[in-house]
Image (tube, rainbow over all chains, first blue to last red; front, side, top):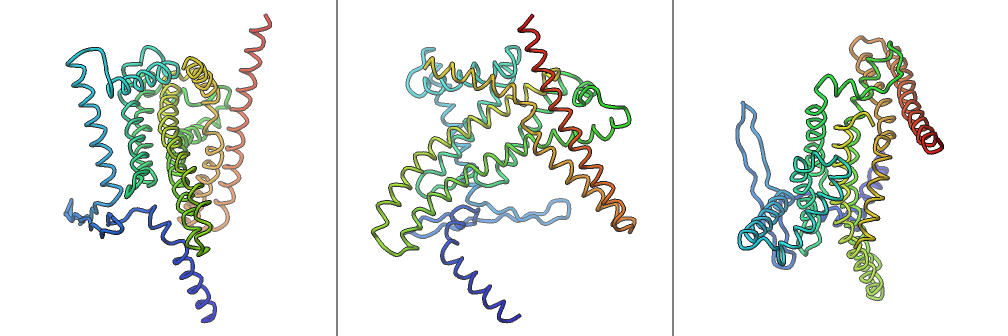
Length: 281
Length: 88
């Protein structure tokens, strides 16, 4: 028994030495590290609510979420101000108008329908820009990807889940919406239990959205760090040209993935909203 | 640019077609897991160890596969309808 524990301890320490630093870079932590210059400790807020004492730590990912929110706000304030000067957009405003027009005409219009374009474009546009900014912030030096934290993607998926259900209920009415979930031609004695299965089906779609964004953003960073880690694990400088070239290649791929994942999240949310509104198809 | 937009239209059309079936696999797994958990909970509550968990897991598997088959049959019916429309 003792022998067994010793072996597992040794294995654990080896694993810590060799790959612990990859996980350290990915998971949430209480410090912002600026490696050669030292670290910045972040505070934890304590307060009492309804008799529960709550610890609310401000973590690395929270800081980067705020930063992303700030950047998106500033970007859109600048854009809105530029329209006051003249209605012909230039520079930054032109780029943002192009992306928003793309979301409106190529994503929302074909999936939800022309009638609902102005209702859902603001939400889906916000989701797109916010996720894109979060993804790109993770690619900066000293940055952290907030979207590689499953709680963040879970919250985003929860928001789009609520929007999907509200859109469906508002169009079809509460009874009509839940009636439309059950497929035709189900025997009567199976109806209540099929209803439970279909309710479960409502949750699986946003769940898949959550996992998709989380896994894609985590995987790219693991690959980059592992390729750079090869230099230190093999302890030879001759591997460095290969691993740096590969890491650079994966980094460029990550730029593409950041854009694609933001697009996929927006497009699938839009598709699910459309499916909730037009149930008969 | 126009080629890209055309491609985008095709992608959206494709996703619209597969939309109802995107959650099918997860739903199949989730149904079985939920039913097994309900059975486990009932067993713990009444102390009738293997009875409810067996019943509910069988029910879960049956329901999951039944739901799956109904969804897939609807797909093939829809395709047939489209083909009939095209032929006539």
